[in-house]
Amino acid sequence: MSLMEEFGRSKYEAGEQKGEKRGIVKARQEIAENLLKEGLPLELISQVTDVSVGRLELLNYCEKQD
Image 1 (cartoon, rainbow, N blue to C red):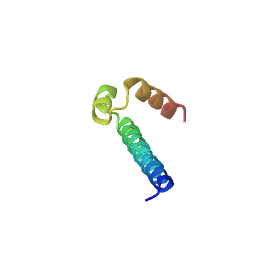
Image 2 (image 1 turned 90 degrees about the vertical axis):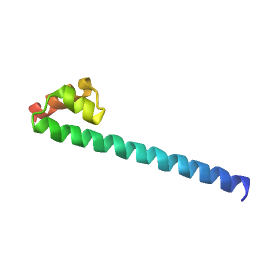
Image 3 (image 1 turned 135 degrees about the vertical axis):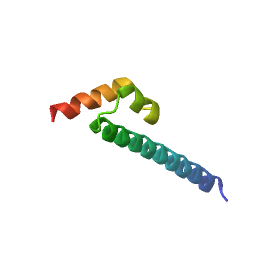
Image 4 (image 1 turned 180 degrees about the vertical axis):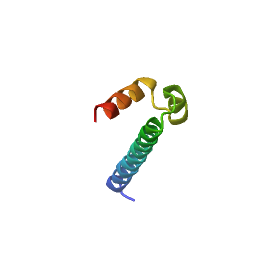
């Protein structure tokens, strides 16, 4: 494999991992939003989803504005 192919492959794999991480973060946020709608305590949602309480408060505020 040439040096350019190796470089391209490493960039591709790095991009793939970055995309997977973004997907995980997005899924956690969607789960947190659904749990907020169910009225669960912010601290519990934060523990379950690893979304900060501050972020949950912001999401909760935005939901109430809609």
